[in-house]
Length: 146
Image 1 (cartoon, rainbow, N blue to C red):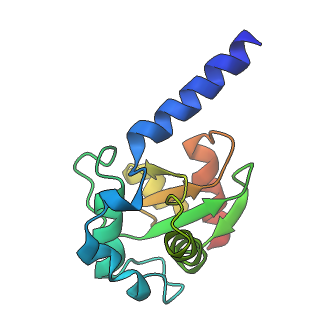
Image 2: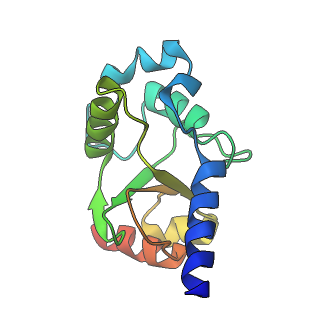
């Protein structure tokens, strides 16, 4: 029970410090462009998507900039389902329209070796996963996608 409590606290603290918690914390001019996000299945982000994620993950991305980056998306309660930005932003737009909170997401930035092994992805966004996934497992999942 003690270990379960520690894991839950760790999981909560990662997400509390790692991303924007409310849509009100995202500038209105960015939210007005939600309709230009997730409009294609390309892994390369457009300028609106890049701007959104640069704000959304401002506290965890350090000097990583989403501009012109290839991003993978993984979802599911166990983090096993490959997704894409269309699905991510469809969920995000719906949550915004219903006045809910943004997707519960975590950002994993790849180093050069991981980028090469994943098929050229710069990072992966894992959303609505109940488990923490080792970064190498995410690299392998994206590699199989290509």
